[in-house]
Length: 79
Image (cartoon, rainbow, N blue to C red; front, side):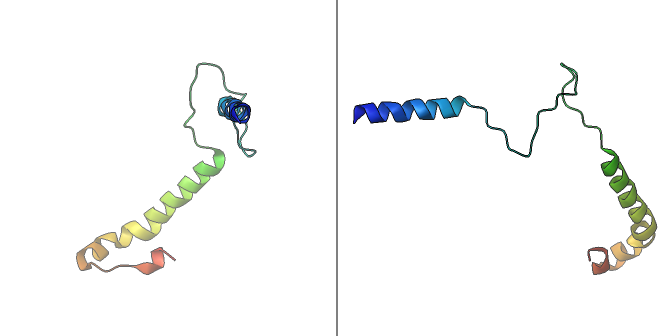
């Protein structure tokens, strides 16, 4: 019985030291050592940001003051 418990402990210890990595993540091997994280947007993220800013500039900002005054909730922005 004690031998089985010892074996379980060894297995759990070996599992806890293994560094699991999701099958969907890969190590970033292209960054230079010591540079840390990169917070730069990808091209797709930059395009999304530009689209969101354009929408806010053209659709929200022109009517925002009036909706703030009246307290009206505009649902078409959310759907």
